[in-house]
Amino acid sequence: MNIEQDKKMDFKDVLIRPKRSTLSSRKQVSLERTFTFRNSGNTWTGVPVIAANMDGVGVPTMASALTKHQMMTCLTKHNDFGDWANLLDGDDAEQIKHLTAISVGTKLDAWEEAKKIIQSFDLQWVCVDVANGYSEHFADFIKRVRQDLPKINLIAGNVVTADMTQELILAGADVVKVGIGPGSVCTTRIKTGVGYPQLSAILECADAAHGLGGHVIGDGGCTCPGDVAKAFAAGADFVMLGGMLAGHQEGGGEIIERIYHSDQLDPETLEPLIEKKDFIQFYGMSSDTAMNKHSGGVAHYRASEGRTLEVPFKGSVNATVLDILGGVRSTCTYVGASKLKYLGKCTTFVKVNNQFNASLLK
Ligand code: 5GP
Image (cartoon, rainbow, N blue to C red; front, side, top):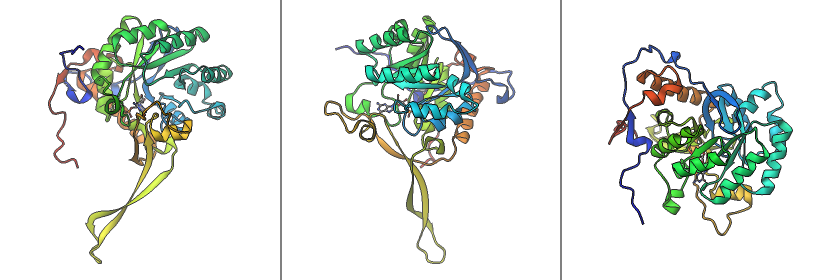
């Protein structure tokens, strides 16, 4: 048994120190980035925030909405040929292909199905996604995907350490997805004790990937626009969001109305006023809910590692997107970064005990 002595950090353990800046408005900041990928050789331009491949988030209507902001979506593994055909039916098909990934696990029959979809629609992105990217089988699978489709932009994950980031890039991945256990509906750390604080995971994996000409996605753990900015500042080329994009109209899902007794009284009857609030179910992709929905139950050998929640219904995703992108632009102006590209170079993190004043928050 070994213990690493230096403490690793989460988003909440740091703040970004402001710096003298010549930028006068956040309007001057560009969030667009252009990357050339190491293994596919393709060049990509867009706003590198990605909707996670989760039910209620990584769905076709979300992809259409986020395309308007030049943001990406990873559709869930459960979107089939027909879903892709519908999504790519309009005038914006090329733009959607530029910004939308198909997801697969490592089962060979699912890969054959996915390949058919990729080839039929000439898709540009595939995300090979497993909970634990540390098995030898996974790296072998990435090699196979690269062999089958040399020109595809290939995302592979999830891992949290430099060694495995490098191994996946050398196996053929363009972009490594980083994060084990930080997610809003993830229970891996509780069920298994396994994980790695997300800010440090991004810092270490980004450094390893960039040394080889690869890229990384910071996946999971962002709770507010400030966390998204910290993920970019730590070196993430892309940031993937589940919980922050959940609960919107574009995610689909049934709206559930809940009735509460408010703490205000009706002036006439002096009874507590009734308040109605709308919610949408949101759950982890390895929760009981997801397994019952997609795989006909929880396999006996695996514990469910995801939670099922009801999150407040937030209406259209556009307002949330503007809030997130506005926040990150503002971070850039605080440190003098005229482009998102420069945010990492312009950032000094300070370690903190208190991140914000929560005294008036319920
Ligand atoms: P969030 O942005 O909600 O904090 O994190 C989203 C990420 O959580 C997803 O992209 C995925 O990597 C991870 N995730 C989604 N569902 C589950 C699950 O059921 N269990 C675990 N351990 N992680 C999940």
